[in-house]
Image (cartoon, rainbow, N blue to C red; front, top):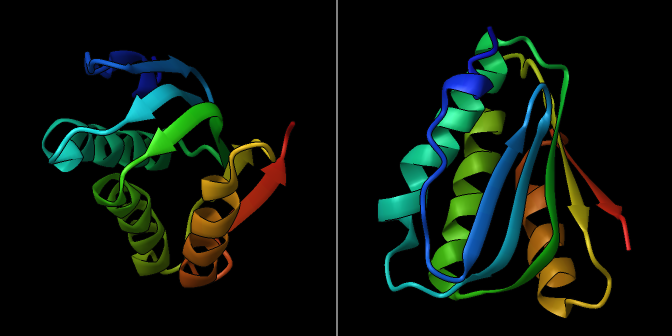
Length: 126
C-alpha cells in the first residue's frame, strides 16, 4: 500500500485538496487563511515524506485551478522547495502544473523553482 493512500486530506474552506496515487496532488480554489501552515504545512510535509517512502521518481503538483494564494501561503511552496534541496541526493523531482491565466503562479513559482536547486520543473498545463 502506498503511503500516499494513508494520508488524511485536510478540510479547508475555499480549497479542494485531492490525492491521486501514485504521483499527483491537486489543489483547487484559493488559500487565503491567515496562517495556512497550521492547516496545510504538516500535510504537505507528510506528502513529501510519503513520496520519498514510496520511491516515486516524479511527483506532480497540479495547481492549474488554484486561483489565488496569499503571501503566507507562498511559504508552503518555499518550504517544499527547501525539503527537496536539503535531500542529498534528491530522490524525486517535483513537477508543478501551472495555469498561464493566473499571473501569481508564474511570478511565484519561477522564483521558488530557482531556490530548489534544479529539483522542481514548471509546466504550463493550460
